[in-house]
Length: 43
Image (tube, rainbow, N blue to C red):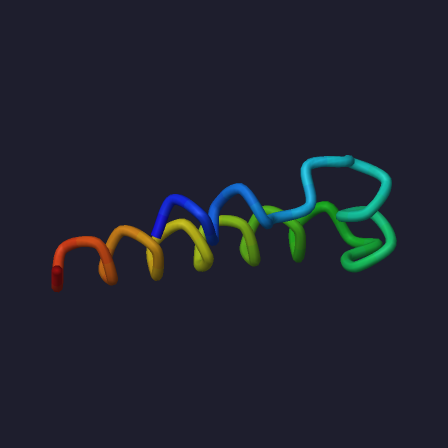
């Protein structure tokens, strides 16, 4: 799983392009982190 985390875009400009709305950005990031935590728990 760690390799996948490293592949995430870390540049804020990339995230701004993906989600122009700050709330959408926060919601997307939270959902992604929760999915990563869930996947790591299954291992």
